[in-house]
Image (cartoon, rainbow over the protein chains, first blue to last red):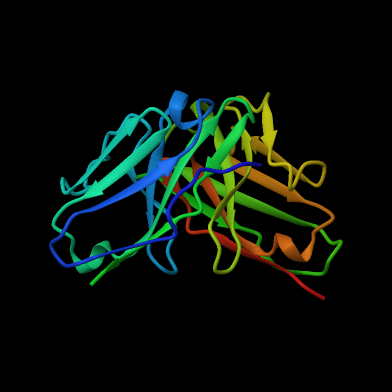
Length: 110
Length: 113
């Protein structure tokens, strides 16, 4: 099943801003929106932003999500060491009748 | 507090079967669709199966269609995944999820001879 497209890695300096992207099509991201998940090594995924670009309670205001057409973006400002993790996007695909994930972006904070 | 607790993982030979369970608490289980998502060692997340709130509709990834069956018991707040004809490539941590809000800790399934 076709997935969403994410860059494999992004590296930014401490206190800089990182923007992660996730590209799908009109059956998933373009129509349903995309959620963003963070995963630290050895831990389960954690929701950062739902498909309506809303942060759950407790998620830092340094994170913001948006969408333009078939591409979703997650922006993290003032990068901290704890932001170093794998980031996944996910969306329901109405054509496949299933969830699709991006391959994940490994964010490194230098 | 929402909790999803998976169990049932372990080591199984190729061609064997395993049944995973996920005990849910902290929310009205019967109101929500539930899913299984897996992650092979060192790899990304892969959707496996989803079941509707009532259990009347199920959806499966092509990679598991005809081999895995998702089900639920709303009276027990429990989600299941029956896995048959297991293959080496099914080796992964299997997560129970109320997509995409809540995730369990995962249970490891290893398929090896």
